[in-house]
Image (cartoon, rainbow, N blue to C red):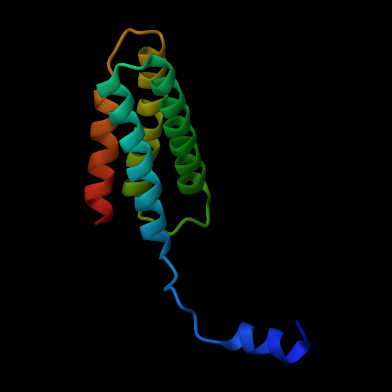
Length: 117
């Protein structure tokens, strides 16, 4: 491909619209929540462990993001999200040790999804 063709491709209209950050967050949370729900319904503990790991990783990233001083979210919302991250961490441990069900984790994610819509 020559330089002119590369330039034409680079400046041609985008065929697919770009997703907003909010939409990307929504899609990730929805996908992980679906995996948690699917594993719970299938009563597949190995599958649940993988979904729990993804969910825990997601919430850790949320906590790191909202704790950053440059985060523009209101302080009260940031505090609530950090609390939910801590809850997710603690409850995930209970689920892994088979002391609790994963249902509250799905409920937290579902509430966040409603908020993002």
